[in-house]
Image (cartoon, rainbow, N blue to C red):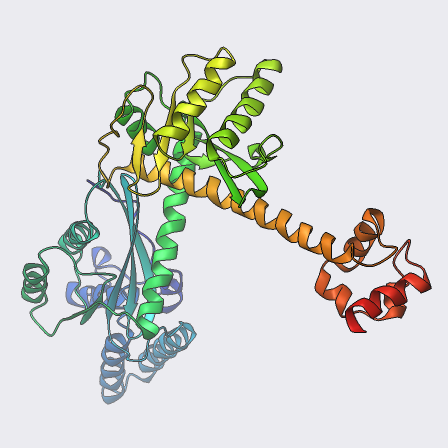
Length: 452
């Protein structure tokens, strides 16, 4: 289903009043119907961006007035031509050839899509229209694009010489033949991959993405709005309530060193980074994902219980059946028995639920699976980021600890002052001496260690 927003106003509509000031009307018998129709045609040319055609019409009319020795009227038409030419020069040329084009772009998310069409006339953008399409979940982009083309050109009174598309629409040949038949003239359809045309389509795609985000924000402001992907997840996991609040866990370690875990929080399908949590693994000294998952789940939810806070609608564990079973047992040890919890295994993107050995049959194209993947990937990113930070800190600390007289406090002062080990290495004794707690003698020691 396509939803048409209010028709966009071409960028040159505000200038029409300058070119065509108050005109006499046929209802008052001041001009003939034929003359009035000519003016209407000229205004249509101007508003649709066909300025070369308009200039040609006005020039012929001006010459007629000159030949009739109506010099005052000819001067008025000359002024109109100048206004059109001046406005024409101010418009942005977006592509090399000065021909008429329609440039399509598309953004899709869950059950919503937004199509943006840039109207380029004589090489210049004269307007933009956008359309929202609903019910597009599980549809290929080509099918959505076909619908957009059909809906747009069925209601359009003008088909340009060239149409630029972001991809191949479904039933491409029949669409092309239909447009050529309607055009009754030369028509080319391109799907540019590189160059200026591709960049314009990418600009349109970003535009469409922003419009989609704006629509989503408007919906989220509505009372009790639940995103489609969250409703889909509720259906696929057979939950009584939509999983609006989701917490996801991941662990990261390298041979047991600097082991950490992350917890990310999603509300209505979107991340809430203020609620993210990082954990240093305290009780496991060797590689053991099960034990690490158990530790962070216990730490997280024993605290929520202690503080009398609400548990999430859904917990997501990164891993397979083993990691899920460990998390479930840990929750039970805390007295939490009816918590909805699932795991997502990376290898085959399989979703497991407690007390079943086989993964859930969630379609690969389902928005609910994409939501789980998005949350899992974010928890993994957050854990990796923290792990790298600790590993880098440990490397820096161990390196500086080798210098006689440099302890934890002085390492902290050096890092606060310089920001990185590389800057400390490349510094001079004079700069090192400016660090609080670093004497002239120590500054020379540090410099000599890296440069001696």
